[in-house]
Length: 203
Image (cartoon, helix red, strand yellow):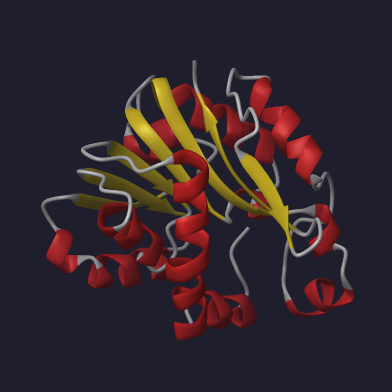
């Protein structure tokens, strides 16, 4: 599901970029470490700021970035112009990475999700795709919005999200184990149980 106008303004704002740079990315690094020299994938790259952080803060060598919204793909390509040799940005869906990127099994050392899977109606398929494209030993870095947040009146009034089959933090973590990802104790909730951050590894 595409973001509506309100959410687009929020996630592309300077305040959100600062929060992502100063709070969320460091939180993920504390939970899962850096990814120096990695071939990385970002699902739901939006305007490309997360992709920039994957290179600058996590140390990935290359990043493939995918987003469903063609307008966001255009923004991301513009933002990431100076990383042209390291980044590929394409339009496509996180629940079919073969179609979007030609991504085969075990193609990536790391996959990043800066809050996109809760937008996907068939979110379990997206989790399975993440597991499929990760190499053994690869890591899945995730920041997600849970059903607790999505049920709040402010979310329901202002933002568009699928309304059925939303996950709690525990349900999301449990779903990771089905395709073979192991979050162990490398996760935490914040703002109560509204948000979930973590890193799961593929054995």
